[in-house]
Length: 269
Image 1 (cartoon, rainbow, N blue to C red):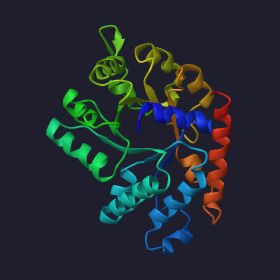
Image 2: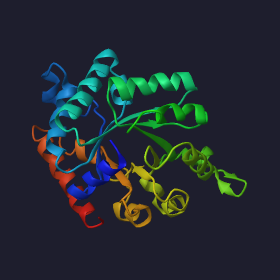
Image 3: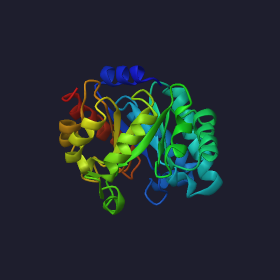
Image 4: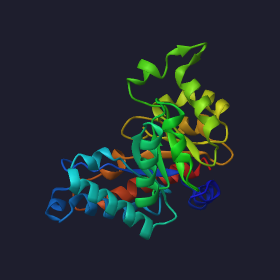
């Protein structure tokens, strides 16, 4: 998906919501466990219920890898369902890959060719080798971890190096390897006040912003500091939407929660 197509989708829907598909068999409705593939059925119903209110989906690989081969099958079925039924939605593989060049190339082929993801999250710690292979595919995106919202981000990301925070060095350097047409950055919603400084470094790039909803991030603060002329934000919500109910109405409730977020977003576009 091109940047122009993504922006058009956002403006058409009046939403920049990304729904995180993080299935946990300890949390999904119990009646679904009778299905042949409970995870896929859970995802499928959630997707159908929320598609009108979001522009992107982000399955987190960890929630599939935990179940071995069956989980991998559920992930592939989920991604193929999205592509077949909602091809205008931006599909993010939240895999957080980051390795040397030849390994990254194989990861890129796995997610971009086999699974047809539009984007993949990438850890840049190993440098350009771990990012550039993902930038070699037309209309595909690398979403680089810029400033995360977890407590441990202070261990490295916020260290001062030559008068600047380390995450600022990371974002500045990574931005040189790609363009705002094929690279985004992850910036946690609970670090919203830092978005203003990040926007000075990368004014035109899209930001994937997790942490709104159950993690306590403020949509208003994210928009205040992070919006640009192309909107430039994909705000992710996972638990607050997909676990809105554990009953047979789980998909309906998820759709209602997604609609609430989308309605709030309209005011900022």
